[in-house]
Length: 253
Ligand SMILES: Nc1ncnc2c1ncn2[C@@H]1O[C@H](COP(=O)(O)OP(=O)(O)O)[C@@H](O)[C@H]1O
Ligand SMILES: [Mg+2]
Image (cartoon, rainbow, N blue to C red; front, side):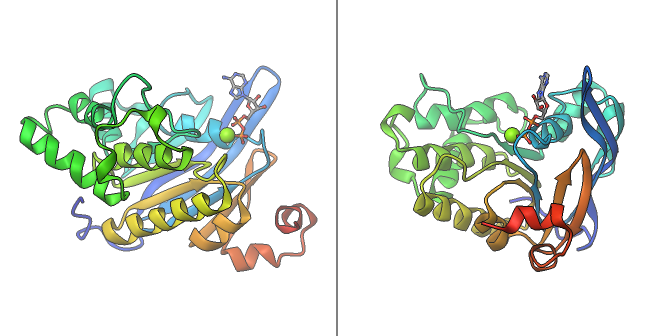
């Protein structure tokens, strides 16, 4: 993928400071902070409705923030114009909750879509074909290239969605509940795939999940989003053995 070798290991690729976001009287984020380091897997856990998806939508510019700053690779995205934002956005891969494939397009067409949107980077057809095949091979689905999404299982759809995200070779991956709605075995396969991708390409990943097993396996570090703030930060072991009742509640099954 991208050459990240020139970036020092501990460099911060994503920096959210004092993020506030309310909907009327519903104060969802009340000063949330987050720092994602180069090549790390950072897991965000929070109860349903705690603002995880809102946070990630602010991050990719799908939602406007009330206040706070969001820097992506040292660029404050709240201050960029549209074209600068588009260039930066190509470096961020976003795997939505659900697979969000285009139902009327084949797998190949689904994967070509982001290439066409960023057509300046990928001008000729043979390049595109090679990239589509490479992306599908990365998720073990080379043979599904001419199938329709409806012909795929839920797990396969998730893989195709992942391939579609990876095809632009993002430096940062954002996963919103990557294992929700999948059976435990398929969920494990997706987690393994995320690990392989991270190892192969040195991608920095922000992973939103409420799946404790997923967090245990994949996290280098975790942040617990409670009451609209980054209530606790630490490794899985640090947080899962913590005495604070609000933290404990996440890890008891
Ligand atoms: N577009 C919106 N308009 C109004 N309220 C919203 C909107 N999006 C999310 N919310 C509210 O923000 C809160 C957090 O939602 P969300 O981030 O989706 O939670 P989760 O942590 O489960 O991903 C919820 O109370 C939700 O109702
Ligand atoms: Mg959500």
